[in-house]
Length: 492
Image 1 (cartoon, rainbow, N blue to C red):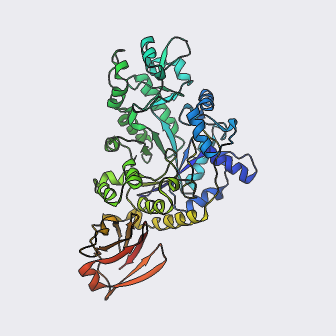
Image 2 (cartoon, rainbow, N blue to C red; image 1 turned 90 degrees about the vertical axis):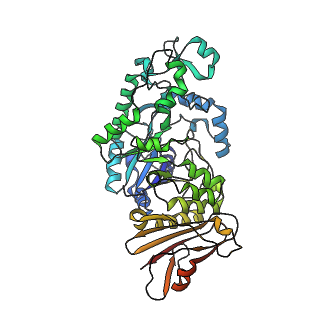
Image 3 (spheres, rainbow, N blue to C red; image 1 turned 180 degrees about the horizontal axis):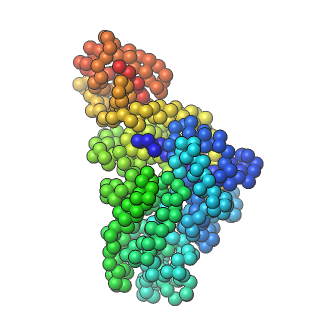
């Protein structure tokens, strides 16, 4: 993939159901018409993340159909949903083979080859923290999982379930800050056999794709695992091993040097995951600041260390977050999209985000409304076209400190600006990230030919000229309505 690649998340199950209806044919993954993939390539995507392709758990499906919080979320999407459209979470992994509902086991390899021939990489899920509670390993290798006693289960009944032997208490997978995932069983990363099994599973996945998005990757870190489960592991005599991710990333990249690792990671642990070899880590901080804060907070985040920025995965929507249109509103979401699309790092888009979806579809629900909002789709197509320019991928990025347009005007604090320099081309990204009118002076460094600077605004499709003397003395004068932007091209 090129530098600062564009990644599209596609819910494999809902999209295939949509395509089967669209083409009135029982398609499998490898039978998806090439025109569908070509349309994504034309938008400038470098890779697709097919979310939820692995064989799900039958027991997890039963749990989902009886879980009121899940059903409540599905009702928000469709109050008249059919029970048969409620299925297992794709993150309760029963087996790392293709879900039979999506095609034959060999079809991932076929699809991988097809996408590569079109210039697209394939990213798939890898869930490191847990497996489905009815996974074969629960019976075959019970020591690979975390156990509790009768007293533990009595004091924390939500944490445990009885295993196949009807006697052993197994722990459910969990994030220490939330309730357990009751359709899963927690792996024991201080057990060598568990680590070896997961490494083998990872290598199996790596053979059919170009990269993995690792779900809740920080939960496998030794200190997090110890803090969450040490009260059980210490009692059972387990001790820490070397960091799983450091070993796993190294082994995979020894065999597949160009393989891409993406980490879903929070809690300020992004840099640690990058140091262990992850190519990109979730930038939830940027998401939160774009959604809940303003331009000064966003600017502060963008001052972080350069290598960290380059290896951050930027997003304003994914399957875990609400639809960007609902969370931000139209104009603010487009403004946020311009920001994330022109920063260093990987840029992640949700498939329904770029077509104007307004509802987050729970991962346990098979149906999704793929109706296109023409205005939103047009604006994303424009943003993606601009951000596809080589300057945004091979150029040098620089954050710009904007200046006040007048001594009594402080609205410049709401304007974000940066440049991309590549050879004789400079791109300027200027965004008013606020609900108020804003003005500023933007320092412009490149020398001009003659007496004038001529800019082309790629959003408005307009040229405008400014005198060199004014820009050198004061900077480029900008005034922007709320949540509006300039994407300026300057060639010299």
